[in-house]
Image (cartoon, rainbow, N blue to C red; front, side, top):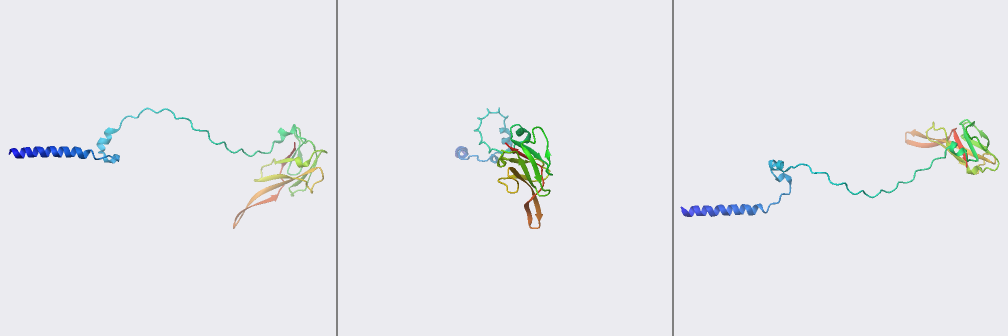
Length: 186
């Protein structure tokens, strides 16, 4: 009997040593390999918040916006000529304007106006802008070296851009339209 007891003891030591050696070969690569009751015991308290990180570099500066037409009242003090013209061709009177304007001629429905300027004022220096934005897409422009207006006058054309729907799709068109505008000659 003694041989069996010694053999069983040696066998037990070998099994225990083999299990310990086998445990050293396994690596836990996924939390799901851990028994859920053991995982629950591993959760601790949340730690303190770490220090704030270093501020990052400043971003690239954005593109400069488009400059709008200078306002009439702000320019009236230094401008050589200033006029605010209604859609019907009449002039608006205000603080400092009209100035340097001898008259306005206009054919109703044409969208074209001739603004007479005082002698010595170059009509090619005129800047115009829409004052009545009730129509979507209203546009005004001065015509350099106009042949439609008398010498010493600035020609102003007013347009309205319209979106016309068709069965083939939409199309952008422009048509002369009477619009209020401001004329400034700095």
